[in-house]
Image 1: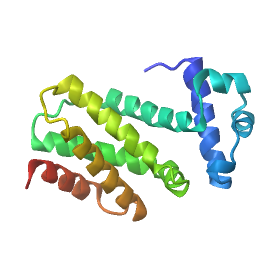
Image 2: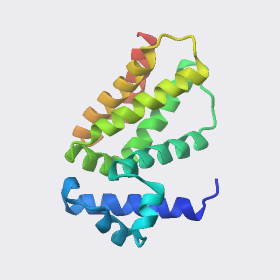
Image 3: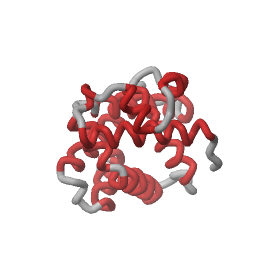
Image 4: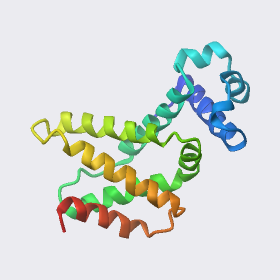
Length: 172
């Protein structure tokens, strides 16, 4: 995967926002402070984002693209799904600090909205005949499990947790 100047600029903006969230309350952070920290102009920020919330949604989208690009298997059996769930949880654990900041700022609903949108799109693309509530079931399960896991500082064993998630889907 190759990166463009736009990708790097967005990365600097995302990084700046999370660094500022480490120090200040989210609602007190202004776009001006983000652009100064990122080393970009205000117009550049607004070229790519409408709001601070858009920066966070981009963070989710970017990480999802990276994750999908890195996947080497198409799940066909229970063990494959456990591997994918393990990979998802590993990515989450590797990014737990930004999620802690989002939770502290009462912005975890952005994560749930992102998961809902992503699962709905995936189901529409891959399984259009499935029950319309199924993507929300999966998104809600992943959201709730990951948020509870985050409360415990992601200490539960990843494979155990991934197996629990997949077993819930397989009804075992």
